Length: 544
Ligand code: GLN
Image (cartoon, rainbow, N blue to C red):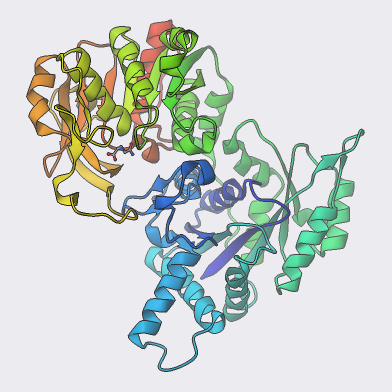
């Protein structure tokens, strides 16, 4: 078992997730099998109950775990699916220690942070290594070195390094090199302090990754090397990039792949980035653009819709057309006619998932704009449910149609609560979550796009389409394109429209740079057709 730990210093939000994912990619490019564990030192058991405004999007895994959004970065950079065991939180670790204590597993001993909590952390990491069989496990430690919350995790990793012995573990520390003053001088002091903090815990970094707005010179590297006790070639600069997908190549160009394989005694093989470079070449070569409206209620924090933005970047890297996302706060749409007018000029509209009543009328309006204006539309989860409600109101003539999530007493509950979940009151973990099997309707638009009759997609919802309304909606042009094996409506599509598809699931979680999702691809293609933009890419790569 070999382990690479990625810690962070100075401030949060340095892009540790992207760094960790990229390091994984460097090894994978050399044919080394890798996996990643994310440590979130907060007390929540998982990210499921967290406000997207505080923590960004909740990323849902195949097994239904509601995880930190970095798990999405790992999946996208590695092209591998993760499991819930790959996201450790203080809540999860403590819960398991307390359960063991209650069962009497500690045989009367005093249960303490060291060795019991640290022991549980080490056990959880070893378990992932065993379950996946990966040659290298990367461990990203959330938060900033020096935080009280991350102490037990760093201590556990220090212990693990001792247990595994020389040459089995590498510590990569990500820090900020700010540029200050009128002459734009890069400053190394924050890095020096944060490395000192790390060494006080007993961890000596092998590699220092310097984040900042600009590239750093060899003088600065030499200074960091001297003060932090790291060889100059292990001080790596990762200035801000036009795309996060450039980062593996930025690291590779500075020899990080070779450096890590040497530290860990792994085979030194030339890396293969063929498909990755193809993606980036097309991405950079953009010719023409389309404007896609994203209508949601957390639009002030883009991280709340991270996987959607990434899915569009993946399309851009396949089609060679710039996709400009225009963010609309759905609450403003009914109040602001100029916003509505702008929405009507979009090349495509997407309404992503959401919860609660705030902003739903604006989303329904956006669906109406897309349907009546023949603007390509993709509705995801709430955006799918609200598309059915819009059709019920404006096509079937049921003005009070609604979801019982918004109006519990509506005479037309087109969307209502899942039968088997009635009576569940706890908020954490009561939704229909994770990958579910879906049978696509033969001859439907979606069956053609996926190129198969059966798919697995990830879910996160409580409400569903009321079967009573399937027939009337179909009679008026909104037809079922797919059902889950247990009989829930998963896809609705409008054959008379250039592209109007709603899905109960979350396709954004499965889009990858090297395998963009067929629904996003078709939405963008429809937007390109509407705006008469041609792709500069002669033959677009086959869809996954
Ligand atoms: N609020 C809706 C539900 O619970 C949709 C959820 C979502 O969009 N993720 O079913």
